[in-house]
Structures are given as structure tokens and as C-alpha cells.
Amino acid sequence: MSIMKIQNEFASAFSQLMLRHRSIRQYKPDAPVDSAFVDDVLVQALAGSSSSGNLNMVSVVKSFDPERRARLCELHSGQPMVLQAPLVLTFCADSQRTRDWLGQRQARLGFGDFLAWHVASFDAVILAQTTALALESHGLGICYMGTTLQSMGAIAELLELPGYCLPVTSLVVGWPDETPAQRDRLPGRAWIHEERYRPSTPESIDRDFGERERRGWDRYRSMGPEMAAQMDAHGITSLAQFYTSKIKYDPDRQAVTSEALAALLRQRGFLG
Ligand SMILES: Cc1cc2nc3c(=O)[nH]c(=O)nc-3n(C[C@H](O)[C@H](O)[C@H](O)COP(=O)(O)O)c2cc1C
Image (cartoon, rainbow, N blue to C red; front, side):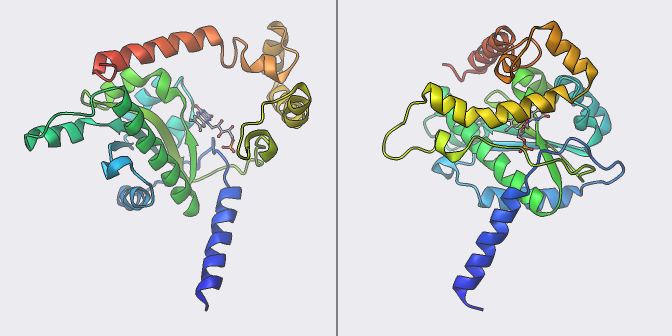
């Protein structure tokens, strides 16, 4: 088989893998995930992820234990898949180990500032996404937990993370017990620019958001009478209004989370 053909087949398999992606929120009960297998996937995922300065300022904590996952579930706003899936992977920005290494070798200490926080966070998120694709390639299902940011301090405490190490995102992992429809994305024309940024116009907003407004509205309305009643009670008449309403990403609540995040970074030394 020619190298070109092998390359094409690999590219095509990778395209299929990406197009098959769905966040999974229902997992098969009593279908475990092997810890050593996950280690292999993680090691390969780090090999397949670029890493700033190749410093690998990342740590991943595997949580299998049901009692600890029950506590994690509380910290993830009670999202049921944290308990239902057999595994939670918490991806941490970690410059602590690098600093320990520098200290032990009598090198000048660094990586204890806001820049280091960004660099280590990028490493953690890049690794999380490579891991997600790798796990999906084995037929496993994953769902990111954005609630990691809301409970960053408490999760850090539960996982006994040291000073310059904080969780940035988490994946629940298990065997899928649902086959959700593919979720739409904004069309390329909305966010791919050539040479210069093309600002949105009222027409482009109508064109690029119209389809997702219709689909998103129908999806949330069909989630059940309770959700529909809540939306009505808050006077929500569009998907845009829903997104920044009290029941989705309430800007007041987001501001509190944002302040808590800044306070935690300050306390850990990442803000100097
Ligand atoms: C950083 C991040 C955080 C997320 N947090 C959550 C979450 O807390 N709960 C959840 O059910 N889905 C969460 N998701 C999944 C998104 O809702 C999902 O990716 C999006 O709706 C698109 O659906 P798809 O992944 O099935 O294509 C998160 C995704 C990302 C990237």
C-alpha cells in the first residue's frame, strides 16, 4: 500500500472520528474502564499534544472511587454523569512540579505568575482534548465538566493538589448508553477570517445564528414542561435571552465565579 494511500486513510479515519464526536451524558452501568488502559491513553495523548517549552506543566487525577465521585458530583453542581460514569479525569494546570525540580537543582525559581497560569492551563486543555479524541477512538464516551471552574478551590482540596496546581477542566469517561444527535456549530464563515478580521453585521448575525436559534430553542423547549415553564416565568422569548438568563449563564452569577477564580489565583500565587 502506498504511503499516500495510508495517509489518506488515516486522515479520513480521523475526520470520521471528529464528526462522530458527541458529548455523552448517559453511561452504561456496570461497565468499568480499566485504569492501566487509561494510563496508556494519557501517556499517548501527552505524546500527541504540543506542550509549551515541553515542560509538561500538567497533572491528571483519575477518580474511580464511587465515594470520591459522589463528592465530586456535588462539586460539579450535581451533574448525574459524574456518578454514573465510572471515571472522572481532572486536568490540572501544574507548575508546582516544575518549580520543585528547579528548586532541587538550585536553578532560579520561575513559573509562579499569571503567565505560568496561562501556559500551564493551555497545556492542560490541549491534553484534555487530545485525550478526549483518543478515548472516543476506542468507543468510549466523554463529557467535559465546565463546573470545574466554579468549584476549582474545593476540587483542588479534595484532590489534595499542591500550591501551584489547580484544576482547569474535567472529563467524565465511560461507555455510552445513548446516541445523541450531532450538535451544530457556527458555520465557518462566521469565525474563519482571511488576512483581516471581518466584523459581524446585523445581516451576518441573522444569517449565522438563525439556524442555531431555531434548533436551540426547539431543543430547550422540548426538554420538558418544567424547563418550558421556567423559561416562560423568566419572560424568555429567544435563545439569546435564554443564554444570559438566570437559568443559564447568568452574568451576575458568572461575575461571582469570576471573582472567586481571581481570588484563588491570587491566593495560590499565580497573580503575584
Ligand atoms: C470547557 C467545556 C465545558 C463543558 N461543560 C459541560 C458541563 O458542565 N455539562 C455538560 O453537560 N456539558 C458540558 N460541556 C459540553 C458542551 O455542552 C458540548 O460540548 C456542546 O453542547 C456541544 O455538544 P457536543 O459536544 O455533543 O458536540 C462542556 C464543554 C466544554 C468544551
